[in-house]
Image 1 (tube, rainbow, N blue to C red):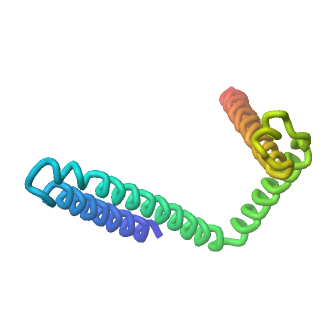
Image 2: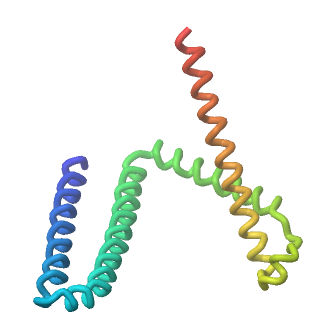
Amino acid sequence: MEKLIRKITNIGIIAIAGIAGLLAFYVVYKGADTSTVVANAPRAMDATFYLMYLLIFIGIALILVFGVMQIISSKKQIITTLVIAGVAILAFLICYWVAPTELSDTAIRAGITENSYRWVGASLNLAYVMFAGLILTFLGMYIYTKIKDR
């Protein structure tokens, strides 16, 4: 599995370098004078952004594929993943239940619906809960290592 990831990474780096080189060649040598290069710069930047978005989506897809392959590889990993997903869903449902339903004056003027206001509130509540959980985890790890070292 590790060899496959290394090969895919190396091929990806070579492909990115080749595409970047071709884009640079296209921008610089498209025209002989500076005005042509400057005129072609926005098109080249657009192409670069499209390439960046494509690489981001490819990276996310590869992370998902290899993650799913790793999860499926053992029964214990499947159970652990389902438990974590269940806890995350439960946390979101609790945050959705606690989220405000009454619109503020600013939300009313902006034309925001009560449903979308509640979804945003639930998302913010979940972000706060996860941040607090992260801090508690760091504190717990710190206390555990101090107790363990004694």
